[in-house]
Length: 445
Image (cartoon, rainbow, N blue to C red; front, top):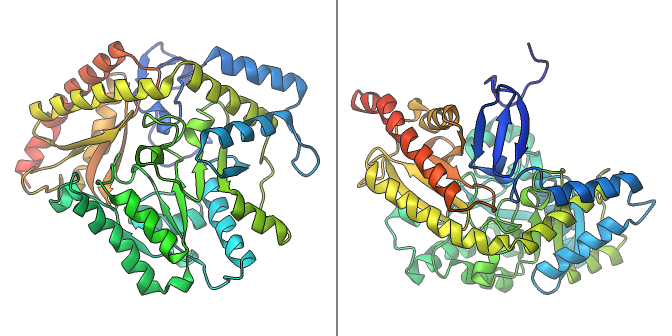
């Protein structure tokens, strides 16, 4: 009996050790980490250079509270992030995770509005489906009813617009008119709310777990930036999953030349070595807040030197191993191979993604895009079957967390062609077994 509890009572074997893209349990069974944990371990497991950097920092200090000391590690990591993010985003606030980063960004935007004499602005528009974190503030901008509904009475829910799921709506994602169609929903929502009340718009540049690697249609991101500028709305890019090279560029928004006002990062920034996240903000936002008395917000472990030393070493590995380029090249191969699986297995209704943030979605009927019956819990069944074969993948439900099963395939950025072969072989075999479980049930209704 375990004294620990987590999201469910499901049992897993005890982890023994991990190296590169592989993990081993105490019985000696090997698993390929095809989802980088929860899209976290971007540089793979047990990287010796990161471990060495952590040891060096541990010999100096493991903690220094930011109000008492500045630390070389936190200053160096902040400098590096300012170099890697769009021009003018030079101010960095460290946190321990993605939910903390999102909360911090929203509170920073709110204090900026107050500091610039716009106290009526407080609404943060987001999309549905979307996922921005599990704390109450982050849940308020999350569009995923299976996660948010139990806590609705406890939070101030924020307005939502539809995510640009062109593939479900029968629209061409390569037609600029499609991008404009979805982006203009933001302007319409701002006008409904009253522009003087709208503080920010938060967006995942490429969808994460809630929409399964959803890439926005052509023209969408440019129009979003125009609308935010027109109405004085702070644009927050949630790069918790897409950042740190995952999609082939350091930030996902770089694919469209988008310059947000605030960027939030975590996951791949600490890469599984330490809890670490960051808010990177425009100078004018932070300067205005600091000039009016400072940021009324903080965390005990903000700027922890051990975490920052690890994060800096992770960024060095991303650069020295050219992992953004590898994510692009291997990601293209992986997506092509997933399309091959789609041709072989009718249950796959869509394949999407960019770099090594990829996914495929199950459908009962491709022509109607009907999802698999929710009671089958198909996404979890597939994960369990793949796990039994030594392949770890990640799953969620695309349609508001209620239906539309999808599988995320997001291995570490260090993978090579051999690893892709192993992933596809495992997925192929799992799909064949998967269909023997669900096909009779689909036919039976």
